[in-house]
Length: 376
Image (cartoon, rainbow, N blue to C red; front, side):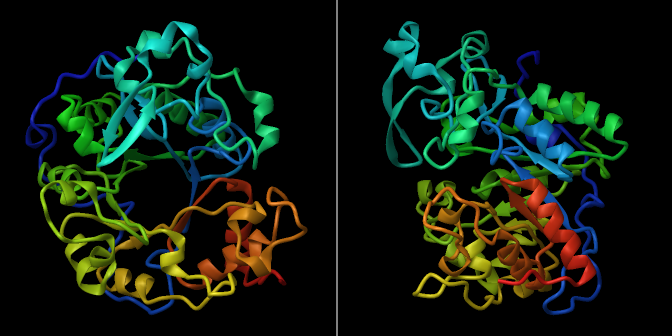
């Protein structure tokens, strides 16, 4: 179990160094092609299509299915330990709402400008959080995953890193971690900065080196810039969205939006502090008004021109997440023609993808490499 990390200025954590080898920036860019032959499959919250998300079971299954990276989102406990949850509000991913001993912890807070009611990790010590058990976040879509409700604890980041090391040894290949800091401005204001303990945990696991199999990602910009100035040696990824704006910019009155960042000029600016971008997949290939898959935008080529890797999110197998023409049957939770969607994105030149179903993504990558196009 991780000790509570002592906060120190980011500039003192690591000396300046070149970007990690995991984020190559070649001298030439070919439109429509990936920046690198090392196309990545990132297990989104683990293998969350098959197990409750952000559990050690989910991460392990993702690695065994062939994912190159597993993705823990990190938030802080009251006592400053980083744990893996998609949000700091945990009523949808744990059984806390059914725990009478925590009934008085239910509150309403403003998170990134939005009122949210529930239970929050920063109001619980690690010891308290460890009494809870994970549950499936999307039970209506993934009813099979509810079979595992109540089996798994909320893991610490240290435990995820330890699992990564064990699986790398067992599988005979490096399994990477693709860490997202959640709501960094909010946690800064709460006195629970995420970046210092993150770097401490990575350092303790000897994953803070230039060739370490690690990415750090964020929907905000300021924390990534601070990490870059501090000389962090692993690659940084700016997450993007089809709507809205980074909350750190909103909080300071900066008018820039995700649309601004996603423009050709915005991507060139991102390249001054980051090594890649993680766009919403509809920013890469939008859907037509009738719900079918459209024509790729210029985002991939614009990002590659700025020497940025492109890892879009999130690829899922169920009908409800697929373009209308690729759905099979009437049930929203039935699997559709996900391989056809995947193929279109590989063809658009992406460098990797976040997937809830890593086995499907791995298969689609192999098909793309061999030139096999799944029939719709």
